[in-house]
Image 1 (spheres, rainbow, N blue to C red):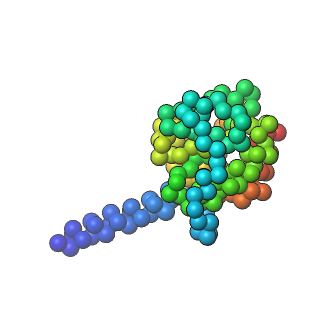
Image 2: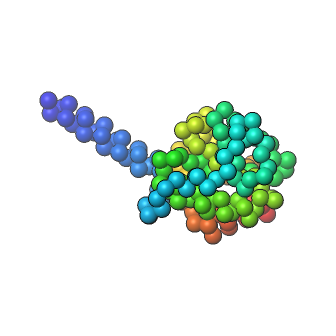
Image 3: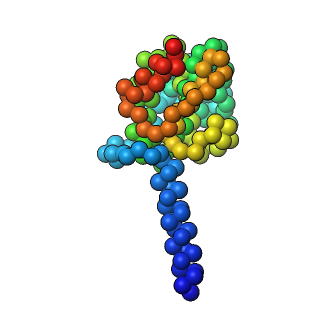
Length: 158
């Protein structure tokens, strides 16, 4: 019976550590309640790959990321249950609005697009992937305030 309790305790500890790791490694302030993604523009499946009139394209289930004609593509991998993701969403939206002429911004829920998350090696969220015009990629993991994220985007636009 003690072995069963030890196995159960070990499994519980492993599950808890995976839950903590999956949401990023930075400390967070959970005072931002509500769904921050509600402010992001939602588009239909057929529009998701080609919408151009919103600052952030929320990739719908079954849709794909469209080519950006030489522009920087910025992808925010997130989840509705992730606190740091909810806190980062307004920063992502603000920087997207400022840089919409030079880059295309996508918001991708890892639960709806596990294949896309796997393609870009997402292991922790929030994770932002930058796809440069030449096809090279770079990424950042964890919460960034607006100034940090704005600087990261500016560095990729150079």
